[in-house]
Length: 326
Ligand code: TXA
Ligand code: MG
View 1 (cartoon, protein in one colour):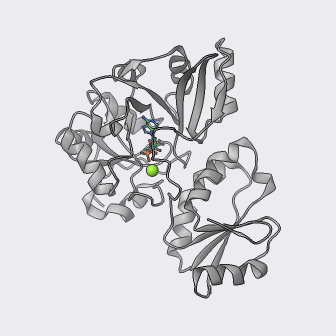
View 2 (cartoon, protein in one colour):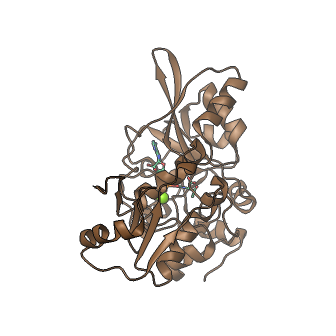
View 3 (cartoon, rainbow, N blue to C red):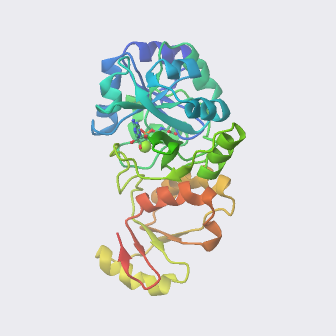
């Protein structure tokens, strides 16, 4: 593993290289926003299509604002309350933001990660670092330096910052103007829930709604994502393996001999911390299928981010009537 310290990471980034960096959510594959070479290398290393916009990591609200042309009171309130932390705010960009980052959109995603090593690195870098999760496009996200190494081997130097605390990617929130005023739209659910963000706004005298919605512009939210190397099948709470097995085998066109039965932790904070590590372990331990059951205890808003990832990571789902849902 090619491990680097903060100074070495900085030098590499300023010279157009990419570096694996720790954050509280997942490891990022970082490139300097002022280096076209670094930004292009993110896409080529990840095999990521150019139409999927990157988010920019910064260590201060000032740096975030310097990349935008409109910073509303909602941006300010949410950034002050949630940064450093797992919230990405979408804002109108200005001309300083490289179009390679935004895939030609007129907005940019901004986030201040809550990790001491990366905050230190960011404080020593002009502008900021673009960083998607450090995995091949569509695959399971990394929550440790070892995961980044598994994905890219010696091609990507890594700043090791230990295991990620949160474990799933940041909540992505956009702020839109409507006839009735501003509203916040969550394009990707994560640790910070709609209810929590709404509460923060309310405490600051802003009564805007916070709603879950698909992003109208960013096609990054593809149907399949985060996928492990073996099929992940979700079954209904009322369906057992014996009933599900013949249907799954028929659909996959082969027999299953080593299924892994995956039970999530009862606490959503722990379940999300372990999510990607579990997905990787099951794939690596000689299993030929991962089976996970829906659970009515796992239905609160704090579970939304987890089920969002599992639903995208699945090969298919069997509903209560044993119908296949892809
Ligand atoms: O926690 C995280 O956010 C991690 C760590 C490394 O910070 N990063 C991450 O990046 O998950 P990535 O590229 O895998 O996901 C960024 C998401 C994508 O779904 C993308 O479509 C969306 O943010 N996004 C980026 N810019 C956007 C924009 N201008 N408008 C709407 N969505 C945007
Ligand atoms: Mg990703």
